[in-house]
Image (cartoon, rainbow, N blue to C red; front, side, top):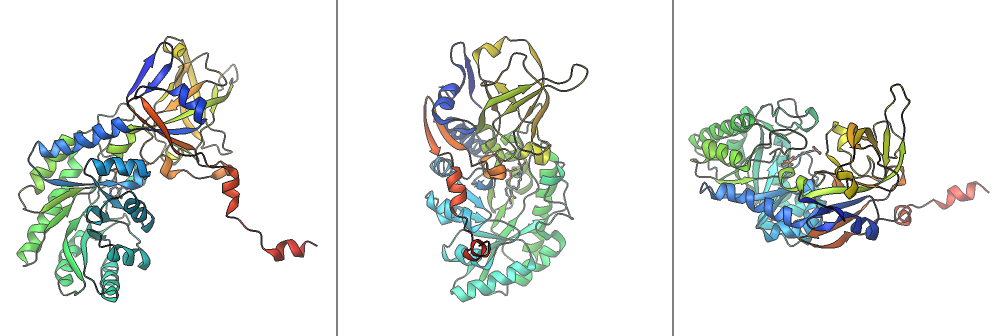
Length: 430
Ligand code: LLP
């Protein structure tokens, strides 16, 4: 993220002092940098344009689904990849054209498929034989022809965290690739589904070219095989997965991805698309929080704790995947302060509510100080829960010196508002 340090104001995000936002909005608070997001959106497109490779961009909105984010990416010429009817509504609400929407997901309900057909969204990525036939039936009932792609499981190891790997034979996603070729032919007889091509998504936070190359090469072979059998393949959807640097990873560049796609699929004369999520949104977001308490460990060996007011219910990634997020102090005095090793934890009553162990932060860090968790723009706010009756945190958008609240902090009253206690329960107590 675009963070700078000012000797008076401390840490600034896209030119806005973070202490100003904390004072006005409170903490914890998600902050998105519009300028950073725009810059990344352009850089990604440029990598493909530089190779004269037309590729449509479908932002994986599961990573960050705020209306402001979607609006901004629409302005940059992006469509979206959705995985639920809820995301479809959000995308349409943000003014994204149905022609720029692709629908992925392993369990789409009848109602979701019907809505997708009625809105005439560009492409439904079908994940099983069963879903293909169900889609045909639903489209028939609507009197329409649905455009679909077969999501293939290429059996490639994405070499990433087990919980975010999706393209291996044992993963729940996609149609086994050997079967997909036959199925593609069979689907030609369906009257209410028109197969436009193939789709794949190999995994997330992928850091090397090799799994992409293997997966896309397999896809290319399939396209040739299907065509040899006399069928039309117009489109190939390459999925997402491009990783970023959270700590010291050597992150792949968009140019690497563009190169691999050009090399493996560039000559096939198909419409190409990708579904990036994390690469676009992760570095554009930070989570601002305040230190509630510091807690000294035992003199012999015990860790020293910094308890901050953000928790696993806000940012779930560290507790779910043991993921690493950079943590910085906001105060200007932190710049040259001697450090010591701290465990940074949240207030939730779970041992896994830990953001980091043995992190060097100022030895003098104290109650009331501000900290930021970095690279939380993807799979951050969207994965929040209200566990421990902790309402959803506020969200702020900064853009080159200006800022605004884009989601009010939820109140506890709102949390309770949709709950009811049946009359008979209170009556039986009398
Ligand atoms: N397309 C499909 C079909 C997907 O399932 C995903 C992510 C993407 C695109 C976007 O992948 P990306 O470019 O963001 O890697 N919650 C986890 C990540 C789950 C990813 C699920 N699928 C995390 O916080 O690491």
